[in-house]
Image (cartoon, rainbow, N blue to C red):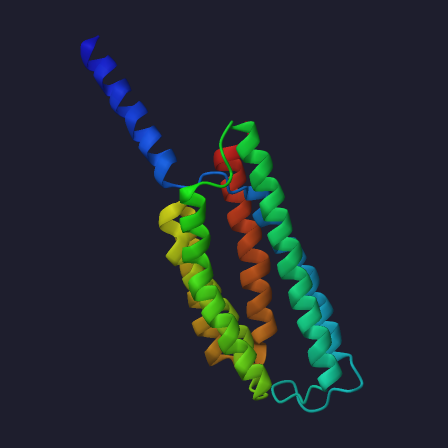
Length: 207
């Protein structure tokens, strides 16, 4: 009996330490919804690129008009905004249901470590767009997002690390197949987010 009590105490201490060092309020459902938004955005981007009369050229060498580029940026920004808003709202809801604080030192470390690679990649991609080097935009968004996930994973659920590594691999593959950037973008931000969100939801949230 004493050994069992000792093991239970150790388990409780471990859980408390884990909760204090990791942000556990990420919602799997937010990943599913983010992936759904991304697939819708990829479809709208596809329509903009390949069915817009202002675009010219073969599949791998399209010349996209300035208006089409602006529409693509609006689509991307809308997907990012909806995903972020959904993630915040569902994380707040999950934290409340678990009687946890949503904004603490762990959450701040998570956000900072996530934003450093993401902001760096964002500025770099804006520079590439300004230089009209559009072929590298999709691969680099995947790579820098993956790096952001890996960098932040030590402060949250371990599955985020594997999600980030998957994004990095997809981004590197996308640099080899530059003409199919939108497909890799849909696979990463759409399919991978839905798969990851589903795994996290059924593993940690469905009760």
